[in-house]
Image 1: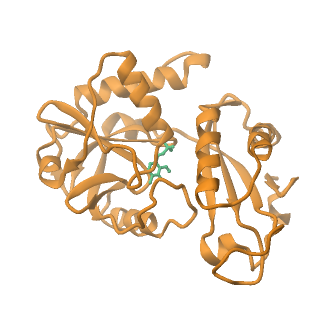
Image 2: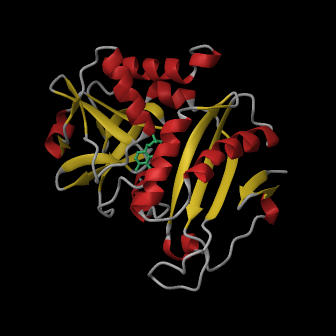
Length: 288
Ligand SMILES: Cc1ncc(COP(=O)(O)O)c(C=O)c1O
């Protein structure tokens, strides 16, 4: 039996129901987070909690700081109650603006946000990380607040579906001739020997994995330039990799059916991959 958390209660998943008037359902009016849990330990909780708080305030959902901090205990309990305290898991959390008769403007003050969380087993696809993945390019027609992790994910859904139909793992998004990010990942590329990624701002999600990689690169003397990669630069990139909470560092070996560099994961990607692994598994022994 799977236990989930809904509005203050830990209940069997089958009993978890929300109103058909929930604004998450009607408008995609909510914010979510996904955290990685290794042997019961949440990776980078503080950074995820800060992004959740920023997202909620960005769309003006009133959830106080103590309720956000309490979600850490919710995650930990879901992990242990569902028998996921050993090995790898993820926890999904979502806060919507709550249930109220449908109006585009906000519901009456006092409408309680709907808070939901669930934990799942996570199996790291190690062969894929080793071999790398294929990606396609796809137009970034998402809205202009991609820095907010809203549950309204249509741009990402359509991009990932196009990738899936093309036999690829990810869609690398292009806006005005520039690589922004992936449908559900941040994107790095080595162009003319320089490692680059799109700077933070309204056009990309401030990925927690991206943030950790930037720190690791600084600590380890790997030069990074936060400057957008153009479509023509992408074509001559010698390495491209994706990063995310469930993606880790994933080499892209082919883009739109053409090999990236030598068509195998490159040295910068491998180095960054190893650095992230050692940080992820620091408390439980590197290289698991
Ligand atoms: C659009 C987008 N960019 C980047 C990421 C990576 O973010 P994180 O490293 O926090 O998982 C995600 C994760 O879902 C995403 O949806």
